[in-house]
Image 1 (cartoon, rainbow, N blue to C red):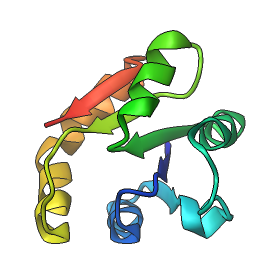
Image 2 (image 1 turned 180 degrees about the vertical axis):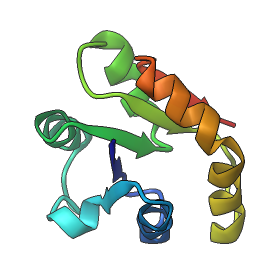
Image 3 (image 1 turned 120 degrees about the vertical axis):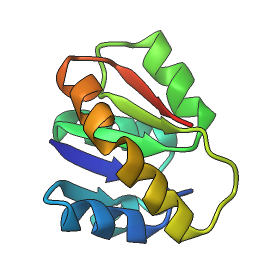
Length: 109
């Protein structure tokens, strides 16, 4: 499973997921730092990646086209990076299970 981390989330999240043995890249790392949401979504789809974003627009795009890439929609308020990473650690087994079972949108609250 491969993850593409969107603009609003820190590159540290991609490094953290990689440290957990997952494949993860940040949009900046693949030259999408100035890309719009649809471009990011097309890139994720063509590369078999799950989008990880706080951007509500990705939620609406996923609802409108459920055949596109899966989405981890981060619904946490502003928080420190360490708290964000800890939140992922707490839910990672359930998050991976939901994605592997085919759930299109997984919310992280």
